[in-house]
Length: 95
Image (cartoon, rainbow, N blue to C red; front, side, top):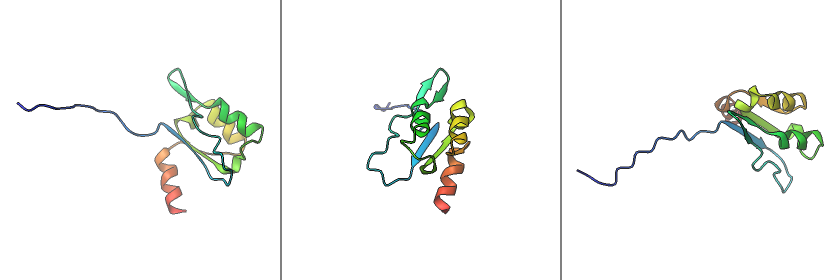
């Protein structure tokens, strides 16, 4: 019998992503997602876009966050919101 058998299964994939393309030296998006029960939220990110500390045109948001009220709010503010993380990543590679 061998030793040191480690069984660990964890899905290493992002539930949601936020990307900011900017010249601003501070990203302003660190830790913007927050667990809200069984879902995810981003009230601080919505606020930063609303008060124009982050320009909506600089953001790309994708994943499960798109199917929440926060995703709708961000989209209404002019943020590019996509339901699929891979879908957004694939488009970004081809640009």
